[in-house]
Amino acid sequence: RDDECRNHQDLCIKWAVDGECGIPAERNHMIAMCSPVCQTCHLESPCTQFIGAEDNRTPALQPGDLNKLFKRIATASDSFDRLQLEGIIKTDEIDNEDGEWVEWMKQYQPNVLGVDPWVVTLDNFVTAEEAKHLIGVGFELGYETSTFHSNGVSKNAGVPYRTSKGVFYQWHGDNAAEQIMERIERVVGIPPIYAEDMQLLKYEEGEYYKYHHDYHAGHLQSPIGPRILTFFLYLNDVEEGGETKFEDLDNLTVTPKTGRVVIWPSVLDDDPLEIEDWTFHEAMPVIKGQKFGSNLWYHQYDYQTPHRLGCTEILI
Image (cartoon, rainbow, N blue to C red; front, side):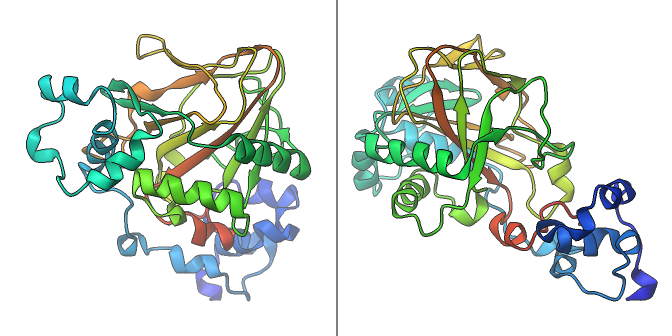
């Protein structure tokens, strides 16, 4: 162990000075990545199992799977016939045994807003009671200033491009949240082990999240891989403002509505490790009232296992 003991990241000294060697949530990561500065070369970390193991991971998406995912949703939309006529969905891409799923999806009124890249909304996906519950959970946990570390990992310091507040919610064991997650899995076909914890959000009047992307290149070197898909839930009607806008897609805009969700990719269909450059977006300022929502981000590889062990930041 001693002859392998070295600092694997340039920020190790800074993190140690900031006291992260002694923070329980950071301990496994710091032992694996920064043992010399933490004086822990004699200790083993569960994070070491991920180092050099990139070829053993099971991806959420293979090339071509994103288009299949969104085309399947589109078969339940009012745009289906038009998309067939335009050749976007071909007859041989339709699963004739998918009828029960399509009928189930129709209750959420899928609306195809874009196809290159895909942007899709569903309505009444979350009930008013479920939305109220998640808003209440956010208040119980305590909404905090939303921030990012340079590699995409949340830290507690404000940033000028985002003024909303949020909190991550480990939803396991919450019956209402589990039912939502089961529905989401049925829509996207990706197990929740690939998803981050729910990020519950609160925007007051004047608050916003400027033009940004959910993809973070730093995740390419971590066990979890990049974010591949965003599933955003609106938890209330906003009196005015608070829309989600995709400036590069002709200012495509989604209006908040209780129970509505909007889904879009962060990566390319033919290469799920590469950023989809057209899905930069922003949360427009709330002009009147409040806005509550929830982000669910899916990664290309198992997120929950490294996350539970405190290993999402290690370099593989």
